[in-house]
Image 1 (cartoon, rainbow, N blue to C red):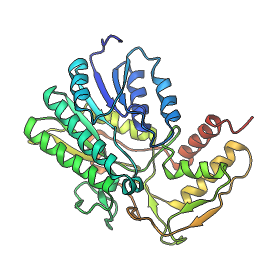
Image 2 (cartoon, one colour):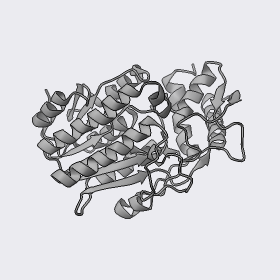
Image 3 (cartoon, helix red, strand yellow):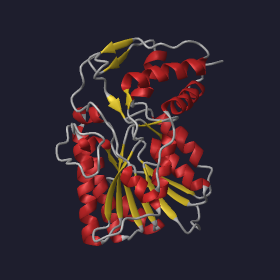
Image 4 (tube, rainbow, N blue to C red):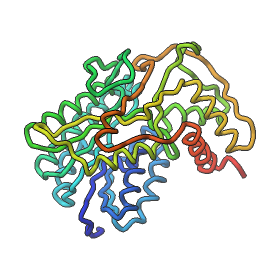
Length: 340
């Protein structure tokens, strides 16, 4: 077992996940100690999670445990042994549509698992708990941009309901036990080594498998779906700025949107991805498209107001979809060895 010598000790659950990997790497590069945990489940390609982990393992200040946040005994023993100063809970069962097919895993990971994290923070006090919420809590809200003060009691998926529950649970624990806690409502995070269940990654997979892509907007280009696509580096910068800024006040709990504040039409995003893959492959890429009705649980638009985050830590995303998708396309072509 590696020695823990760094003053700041970060516990990152979901360390082999998309955001967890990038955040862990950034902290490790700065010399901090990271205690990573991930259950390496097969919701998507485990090889990709293992590839992320391989980049973290050489760091002397990285310790990894394969385990699940729903294992309360493991959570308690991990906190007792490593005594983290700051906890970042990014372990959760993700995906809106998957929650309709497999509700059990969402309750186990997102409700029971998060409860265990809160209990561990209660019994082994920490300087700050930062946890993943989601833009999905806004449900079918028509008013845009979404603001943290908006009414969010009408979730349209079980996934969204579990994330709203996390915010309520964190608020309660913060109130009762003085745990400084910050929830982050993420808006459509994308980039290299991203999640294969996300649309942009799935579109690339479909193209290279010779399959059409499905677009759930009824082919209505005037009223196309809007998404606040946020590049991974911007997300990590926003999280990093918040880590050392726990909320103050009577109840030390705060929720922030963390998004791009610049929504794009889904079709514009798809056309940009086609161009970026064309650049990476040095040949023209055009997806075959099938248009279908919007799916249950999906929302027509996600658009983050990031004013509160800007005021708190000066966060301002700066990566355009052209730049971000080109980095994804270059990585994708290289990772899957699509050019000799």
